[in-house]
Amino acid sequence: MIKIGFALVISIAIFPTVNNTEQTLPDNLVNFILLVFKELAIGFLIGYVATLAFGAIVMGGELISSEMGMSMAELVDPLFGDRVSPVAQMLQIVALILFFAVNGHHWLISALVLSYKTVPLTGFIELGFSMSKIMLLFTGVFMAAIKIAAPVMIILGLTVVVSGFLARSTPEINIFLIIFPMKLLVGFLLLAITFPFITRTIGYLLELLRKDVFSMVRGI
Image (cartoon, rainbow, N blue to C red; front, side):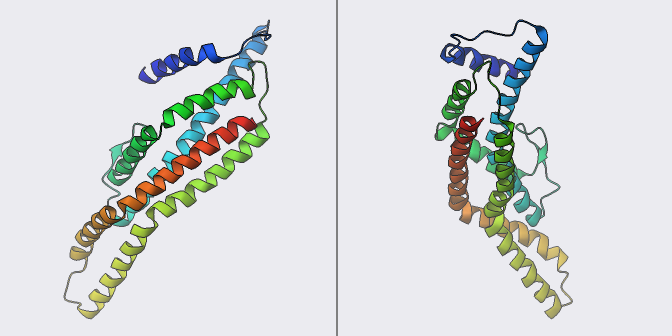
């Protein structure tokens, strides 16, 4: 209900900006339904592209959590409606704070207003450009997730290698009782050290998101 009410408020807010002069709505039910589905498709495209950056951040957090051995500790994600790890949830909250800090909600509403200028109420969508753009963005999500998680994953991987040498040199030590707490300790320490790098990467992703959203809206 909150999402529906929020969408209604935004629709009412941007309605006066829509230029509806010299535009006639369809006079039959079939064309009117097609028009409604066209508007829903445009909104879905903008919303989907807007969530790709957050998806990359969550995926990076999941990679870090998996390497730290925290895959079983999961929380409910309100954005995607799925269960995510605490590290992914923390990075997503940081990304959401940065999103509002850089006025991301302003340019997202501006993209909605621009969509009515590029595709009028009675216009059509160029699905070829939109789908190709989304596929490029989707492949970029995996690269962005790896860039976010790479520093922590590499050092944690080296920690496992060192633990393997330790287990070979001193077989009487139960390495499994040491490796898991050590990975957690090293993982949280690395998160604290690399947090400025992660926040800069998230800010860079949000800036790319702004450019990609407006580029897609201008091309549909």
